[in-house]
Length: 259
Image (cartoon, rainbow, N blue to C red; front, side, top):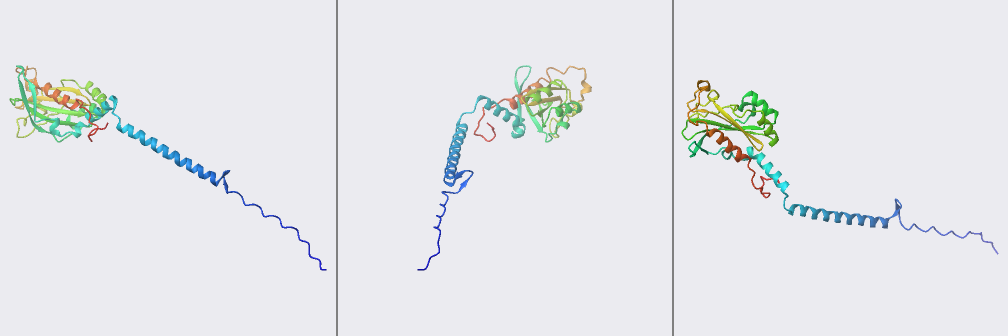
């Protein structure tokens, strides 16, 4: 009988791993982690959307309305038409307390801060951040007095206030703006006799005035002008300053407002 070679019993094959591992977690565990992260993102997005909806839907606070009103006022010098800043007619009262109207002779196209005023005042405006000086010239109802009104725009009320403190109220700091073919044609810098300065919000409103015949100021130096000749001058400046600086009721739905 032939002998068969002895064979060792075959070892059992190692059992395959249950699952691939990464960072100590099985693939199935990573699936749950990914699902939890996705759910977290969804919840966060929903909460954020609800917060945005509530923020957009709520009424603005009093502080937000004031800030919006201040921003709108500060933009008026470039957002409003020139004819709104300087209307065709401005009312004033005479010594007899009668209402008369100054008529606009023209609006200057120049807006440079440095050339609209005397050099010393130009330095004051520059130091406090002057953005532009808008000018228009009016004649009183009898066309005997000519008034140039200048609106100096500043970044904010504080800057305008500081500039105002450095400019004498009666100084003829503003340069005259004559307009050929009108009653204001002869009103040049030599004819300036008086002036005013008034702050309204972020604006400094300057005026300078003289007589329409163009007589030099030196020719009438020391003389008292007849009656209340220049009485309308501060009134006209005040009207422009008040119109520019009076806050309007904010309209957050209007694109001109930033609520």
